[in-house]
Length: 556
Image 1 (cartoon, rainbow, N blue to C red):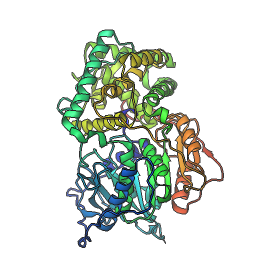
Image 2 (cartoon, helix red, strand yellow):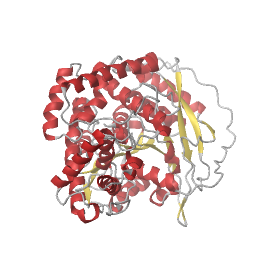
Image 3 (cartoon, one colour):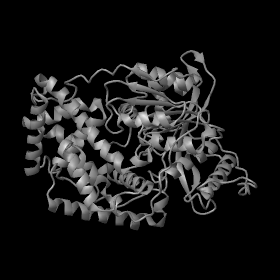
Image 4 (spheres, rainbow, N blue to C red):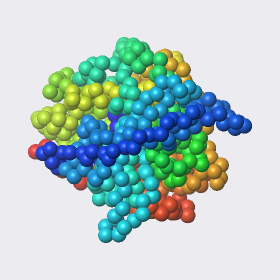
C-alpha cells in the first residue's frame, strides 16, 4: 500500500470538510467530566484448563490486557488540536484520552504503550426523532500510518449524522502513529527532500543509489526506534483493537475500517470472531497470505496504470478547459513534457518530476483530485507555475507527521511478512512490470525496498478465514476500479469471511466509498450499521458522477 495517500477517500473527504469548516476565533474543546477513580488492575488470569493454539502467549497477553482495560477504562481529558482539528462547533462531549496496551503481548506485564483515543457520545437525535444508543463505532482510516483521531468530529457532517445519532464515534491513533508511541526512521528535517527525479526506466547507477538509500533507511528505523520495532505489526494492531474494545466497555466491537484498516479488521475477525458485533470493511485489501505485502504492491502498481488511464481519459474529454490534449496519448505527452521541464528547472526550486508524479498519484486515489491536478498542469505548461507549486511542493510544517506516517507504514509492512532479500528479484519483477505499467511501478518499489534489508524478525501472515456461523455478517465495500486496493482483493475478502456481503460501486475507482457522495452506497452502510440488515446477496451501485471540470485554477 503506497503511503502517498494513507487515508481512504471517505477519510480524505471528511478531513477536507473539517479543515475547510469555519473555525471560531478561540475554539474550545469541552473539558471531560471528572473520571471516577479506576479500580485496581486485576491480576493476570491463570486460565486453568484453557488450551492455547499457536501464538498462545500473545493470546493470553491479549486477554490479560483486555481485562485490565475493562477494569481501568479510558482516562479522558481535552483534545490536542494537532490530533483533532478544531471546528466552529465542536460536538458536545468531545473527549480524548489514552488506553494502555502491551508493547509485546507475549509479556503483558512488561513495557506498556499508550494509544490516543478520541470519542464523541451518540447524539440520540436523528432529526426530530429520538433514537437509542447502540454503543461505540470504532474507525480506522487505513495506512499503515494514518491516524483516525479526527473521526470523533464526523457527526458534524450531514452524511454521518444518522450514524452519529446512534453511536459514540471513536477514533484512535494506532501504535506508532502520532503520540501513540511514535516511530521514526530518519530526521524529519531530512524527510521529503525535494526536488526529486521519477524515472520510469531508471539507470543502473540510479538503482544503486536507491538501494543504498533503502539500506540506510532500514538501519535508521532500527537505530531510532530501538528493539521494540518488531512489535509494530498488523497482528498487534488487531490485538490492540480488542483492548480498545474492552476499554470502551463494549462486549462486542462495531468497527469501520478503510483501506489497510480492512486488513487488520479481517485479522481481528479471524482472531476474535465472537467479539464482533458489526464490521464494515471499505476498500478491502487482499488478505491472502501470499499477497502480504510484496505481491500486493506489485498488483497495486499494475492497477494504478489503469487508473492513470482513467485520469487521462477524463482530461482529454475536457480539452476545451485544460488544453492538455484531446486524446489520452496527447495528455500523456503533456505530462511528459512537464516532467522533462521540471527535471531541468524545478518549479519554485522544490517541484521536480517526483513531486509531479506524487501529485498525480493522488488523483489515482481520489476522483475529486482530478480538476485541481489538471488545472495545475495546464497552468504550468502555459506559463504559470504557481498552482503546481502550491499543489505539489513539500510542506515543511507537515514534515514530522509525514515522516512518522512513512515510518509506521514501513515498519508494519516489513514486519508483517517475509520479503525478497535479493535485489535481483526486485529488479527483475519491477523491470518486467514497468514495461506495461510505468506510471507507479518504480516509485512503489522504492517506497517498499527497505523491507529487503529489514533488521527485525518477520511475521508469518495469518491465513484469514472464518467458518460459516462463526462471525456475524460483515459488510464489504469496494469500487470496481480502485487501484490502491484492487477489486480482486474485495472478492477474496468476500470469499474468506463466511457470510459477508459485498457492495460494489461499478465502473468507479475512488479509494474508499462509504460516507462519500454515492447515496446508494451510503444507504447500504447506514442500513447495516443502524439495523444490522444486509442485502440477501452481493449488490452493486451505479458509479458516482464524474468530477466537474474547471473547479480550480485553469490555464487561460
